Every structure is written in C-alpha cells, then in structure tokens.
Image (cartoon, rainbow, N blue to C red; front, top):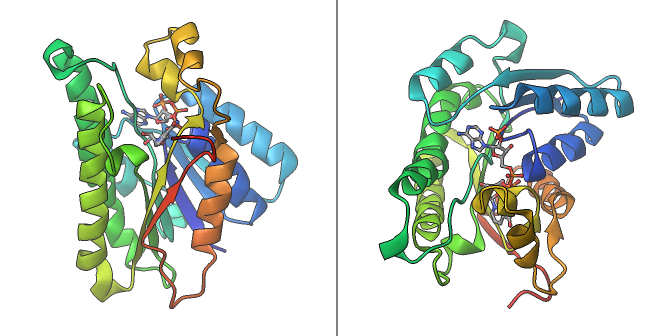
Length: 244
Ligand code: NDP
C-alpha cells in the first residue's frame, strides 16, 4: 500500500487528490495551514473509506525549520513516503508589475517556489526508501506562458517548470519519478485567494468557459501514478476544452 504526502490538502486540487487516492487505497499524509479543513476532509474520507489510514498535520510550507521539524517528527509508521504531491500554492493580485504589491510577490515566491523546495528536500530522504517513489509538482499553464498581469505568479510557475526538469535529472540515479501537472483554469478557492475574497471578481474569471474541477486533475494524477515502473510521464498540460 503506497503512502502519499499532499501539501495544500485543505481545499481544491489537494483535497480532490486525497479523495481520489483514498479510493485507490493509498495511505494519506495530509497537510496545510487550516487544521479545521483538514479534519473535515479526514472525516469525509473516513466515512466513505473507513479502512484508509490518514495522518494530518499543520504545515506552512514557507517555514523551512517547521517543514524539517514536521517531516522529522512524523510517527514511525508514517516515515516511509512513496509519493509527494507538491500542490500548496497561490496567486495573489493580478496587476501590472509597476502596480504590484511586493508583499503579494513575497507570498507567491515563498510558497510556490521556496515552499516546494523546502518540502522536497525534507521528503526526498524518505522517498529514497521507496521502490515506487514519485514526486508530482503542480505547475500551471502559467509556467508555460505569460498572460497580462500574470508577471510574478507566472515567474513562480516557470520556476516550478524548471525545478521539475532539474529534479528529474538529480533524482534519476535513485529511480524517483518526477512529473509536472500543469493545469489551465480549475474551479477551486484559487481565484478567491487571488482576489483576496472578492467573490464577484473571482467568479468572472471563467468568463463563459467551463473550468476543470479538482477531480479532473486528481484523476489525471492517479493515471500518472498508476503507470508501470518503466514509464514516467514528465510533463502534462491539461486545459479546459474551451479555454483559449
Ligand atoms: P486552493 O486555493 O483551493 O488550494 C490551495 C492550497 O494550498 C490550500 O489547501 C492552501 O491551504 C494551500 N496553501 C496555500 N499557502 C500555503 C502555505 N503557505 N503552506 C501550506 N499550504 C498552503 O487552490 P488550488 O487547489 O487551485 O491550488 C492548488 C495548486 O494548483 C496551486 O499550486 C496552484 O498554483 C495550482 N494551480 C491552480 C489552478 C487553478 O485554476 N485553480 C491552475 C493551475 C495551477 P491552507 O490555506 O489551509 O494552508
């Protein structure tokens, strides 16, 4: 039975991954900053799949010391990890560079880039113990293109794209698979976070396009994880059919 660690499991894509991978029989290590949301998810999953083991813990991926401490102090039965899903991430603000808020920039760079690095570094020693080790990095279409006012968020996801390639090279000798999943628009709390709670503005981003759901992404990740040992899907772009 494989164990998966999902960062940013408290909502959206991360929570959907937890649900889909519970159905597939994975043991779940779930973390994020909002403990109440993690506990709600645990109850939901355990009601549906009573035999699934779940361990939750609070983690802010921006704090390297806390990341190291959290991973080092996992209970012994949780110290073998097979799959890491680097999902925690956010966009804040959508302004031209000259109008941007530097605190927003820091939050995005610290979470999307440094957080992914901190968690990966802490977890890789545990992945090395697994015969089926796999890191899934959640990138974005924003890591492949740059759109108006996307500046710093796009830069962080371009960094994820580069780090995904770099990790694959660095981890090749250990047989650890590495995959980037790059979604277009997914309907989650992402837009509300981007527009700091402005629900109206958040809703308008879809602009007539039927967005992807968290489950669409989670099912794709399940497909990637279920390929045979000799197959590694390195990089996937997954878009709503109607998104330009
Ligand atoms: P959500 O806002 O629904 O989920 C984001 C998750 O990240 C939450 O669980 C949040 O948990 C967690 N998170 C944010 N900051 C931190 C932090 N400092 N430490 C730990 N966890 C954190 O959005 P999505 O599910 O859409 O986003 C998931 C990933 O998908 C992100 O990397 C995003 O960039 C990417 N993505 C999203 C797209 C979309 O259109 N939705 C498109 C392309 C990529 P908590 O607040 O509890 O800490």
